[in-house]
Image (cartoon, rainbow, N blue to C red; front, side, top):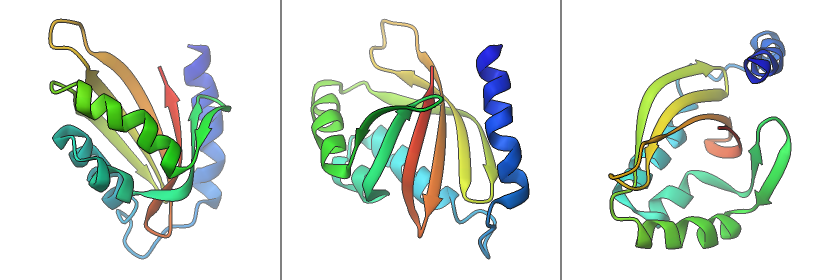
Length: 134
């Protein structure tokens, strides 16, 4: 419950100050691209949705790593070694340039899925930041 309260406090200011692109769903494009590429195991298409200096966090602000090349070393082996890897979108909220996805990730079909909330910040058509809540 504490994390949910923190999440709401984090998002409330963005409702007022977030820049809304001309197309209110423009932020969805790179997020959906990376989701589709993730499910297809297409590393290059997956990475194309991210800014070169993307930052990946554990919610609320623990920096896990930075940069697209670091993502390549993380996701490349995972895509190669996990043919059953799938991410199912449970729900999506779009607020300006922020996209929040509730996802169910299957790493192994014999194991229960992992529930994740991914909070994407999109700028200039690319994902600039991701915060994962597990």
